Length: 340
Image (cartoon, rainbow, N blue to C red):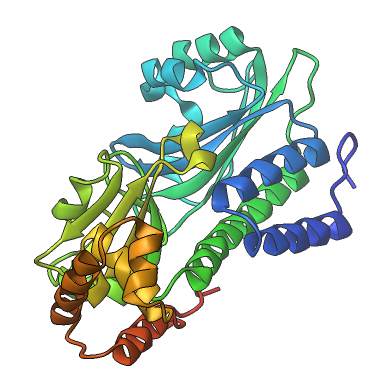
């Protein structure tokens, strides 16, 4: 155990067990929020900055971010000195490294000094859960504040790296679990404002990738990217696909979008009123009952019934009921669990 922190094999085992348990109960952002708060107490750091970033030789691009115990302007200010970020420079030079910075010793530059003094960050440690071949990898920058704060020991740095690696796996599992519980044939993914896939992209590629045969990389196909900022339900007629775009409330701090996609079903060709009539007829209601329940004339119900039959290619209420039952069945082709 390291002085000032509570790191040992049992605490790490408890952490892994908890993040995996949360992976089947909550979303990735909720898991990350809990994990960062838990690690701050376990390791004794005062603030943190975390999210998904892309580290390249040309610099760092932040795709989504959130913070713990930092002012709201932290990310905006960091952007003004990003070229001087010594932690990022270390990760660029040595992929997979654990990067640290101390305000009053070691290498310095104007940008790091200004950032450190502005927010009182005297000790920093940054780790990443690198995803080879992916544009966005999860990162965690941990900060200790105050001139007398202690350094991040080698044991604490290793604990941080191992914890973030486990957190990355748990968030991937949470995406799989979300899709496993979703309605038939439905795939849900998280993307940033630029259309870069953060979580769930492998599921989308496996289940619906056939619609975009030339699609490669983490950037969504152009047609999907255009929909990101238009909330609501969209029909892609060429692909015969339904796409629902929304701001997932839990992710508002990270400015992520949730896209839910599925193949079109015959019922999607019905108007809203026809859908209401069809569902009641499928439940065994008579024309008179449907008319009374929806406040329309029985003759209208009869006309809409014929239109429903024509659009769905059925000839009886029994066939209609069977089609509705099939639409509510389980997944036709369940997604594979994520690789470890």
